[in-house]
Each structure stands twice: as structure tokens, then as C-alpha cells.
Image (cartoon, rainbow, N blue to C red; front, side):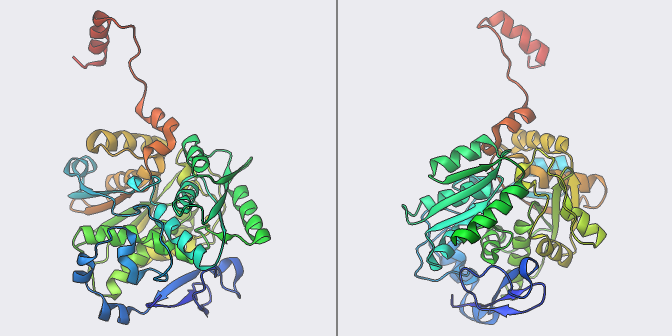
Length: 416
């Protein structure tokens, strides 16, 4: 790690050496989230946009000067990163903004942005000498960890804790990847605490993104990549769905990195979007008070985190960017799933479109102007949650194989 200088506590400022299994500050306990610090002056002197453009590896590892990994550690061979960025003028007009770019991170190998964090996790687990990696998850973090670990051919095993509400598609992924899956008959919060206790008891590597500082570094690559795809000319806003807070914290870290090494001058505002049925970070953001644990009542299971661990990093990043937070209803999420699918061909799970529903609400309230340029990241593929996709899409036409009956049905539907 030529360019990593240390880990620093966001609570007390104490610094620590960048050990692969260092998670929290010794003095601050669970409040002592750590952040990876880089020697930006050295990076700027040794790395340029031209060198990046010449890099042959199209995966997240192309940003190696800004990643806390050792050169010799084996990387998972999956093609994590290099997801497409689509301009959509039709969607921009539907939302009432000037320009919209949609980055489809649902096309990562296991179907979500969380592959970026899990790829870092399996590298750091190897550096720590671990044989088992574990986490709690509503689904995407779990499947991304299991898939990236499996791609190493058996070097790492995974033990995953999921709440009973985890969607079937995500459970199927986990089991096919060979993970040991513990379905906790309770909430995500209960699954988290059981995973925490098991990790401590058996000494497994901890992939829980809320406390592992290296995973934010993986998530930030979505914004590093988006910036490169736009030739480092960033839009006015970058928009993310928010659950535990790690992804939008990673977005801010990426913007800091790019600014400090001179790759960008303009820093977009961040918009964090939560579901109305589970919005503890939004409440803390606007009340300037400590987090209050909430229920997890939303169809957007991937962001249904009632007690988010990384909320301080998320709020700090959003405020530093002069950004905002907003909540959206499940009905708005379903409507946006339909609109996105029918105008762009991008299939997103509920949490994957919550951010875009937030853009619509902010435009309607006059808080995002019609002249704004927006970058939005779809965080998960619609195949992750088929039941809710069916709820959003509606039912097919069911009928006997008769052409006259078909014609009548088409007339009733307004198709002909």
C-alpha cells in the first residue's frame, strides 16, 4: 500500500496503522469509525489521468493508487466495476431536469454495487490471514461477498446472517455460491448482532460495511468510475439510495480523493434518499441530533436499516457537499421502477430506484432546478427481488389461445 498513510478515527481523531483487520478505534469503541487516509501529494506526483486512461485492467483495480490493498494480494477474478453509464434525455424530461446519467451498477457480477465493497473485503481478508469471512445483510452484501469469495476457488469460506425477510433470489445466490447461510428469525438488527457475536467468538474476518473502513474504499469506485466515464466533468448532483450510509459516504470519499489529486475541480452536491418507512439517517440529518433507531417498514429491503452504523460518515459527506436528504414512499418507488424500465430498459430493484424517486420529489418541491444535471447510480438489479418487481409491473394478460378473444382483450387494454 504505497500511498496509504494511516487510519484515523472520525470521532476523536486518533490515528492507527492500516492493519487489514483493524475495524474501530481502540478508545472510542463502536463510535470510533475509522477512515483510510492517503498521501495525496505522492499520488498526484506519480499518477495522472493519462496513466489511468492507459491502464488495461477495466475493473475497479485500475484505481489502485486510491485503494488500500497490497500489490501481491490475489484479486477476485470477477469483472467488478466497468458498469455502463447511460445518458437518458427521455428520463431527464420526465423528471424535469436538463440532463440525467444513469450508472447501472446492477450489472456487476452478483447484481449490485456491493460487489465493489466485497471485492475489497476478500482481498483484505487474505491479507489478514483469514479463512472465513462473515457479515449480516438484507441480501446484496451477502451475495456479493459469497460470490467474490467463491471466485477465488475455495481459498475463503463465507458465513452469512440474513433476516427472515431476505428475498428468495438473494438467498438462492448465497446458497449456490456455497455460503453457510443463517436465516435469523427476526429483524436485520437481530441478524447483525448475531453476526457480530459470531465473528468475535470465532475470529472470522468482518465484512460488515458499517464498521470495516476498507469497504467504503471499495464503494467509492462507483464514483471514481463515473467521473472517468464523464471525462472528469461531473454533474451538479450525484444521487444515491441510503441504507447503512456506506455507499454515499464512499461517494464523498471519492470526490475528496479526486479533488485532492487534481482530477476534478467541480464537486457535485450529494442527494441521499431513504424510504419513508425506514429513514433514521434523514431524521438525524435534519434534526442535528443523535440517531434514533426506527422500524424497517419498506419494500426497499436493501436500504431497510433501522440502526445504520455508518450514518455519521454519510451525514458528514452530504453536508460537506452542500447536499440534501429526502424520503420517498413505496408507491413512488414502484412508480419509478416502472418508469425507468419502460423508458430506458434498465431493470432495478426497489432500493435501486429509490434515489431516482428522490430526484422526482426534489424537482417537484423546487429544490432541484430544471437546469440541473444529475448523475444517478442504480445500486441493485431487479432480478434480486422478483416479487416486488411483479408488484410494480402488474400482471400479464391471461386468456385461452383464441385470436378473437385476444383482439377483445387488446381493445380493452387500448393496445389496438
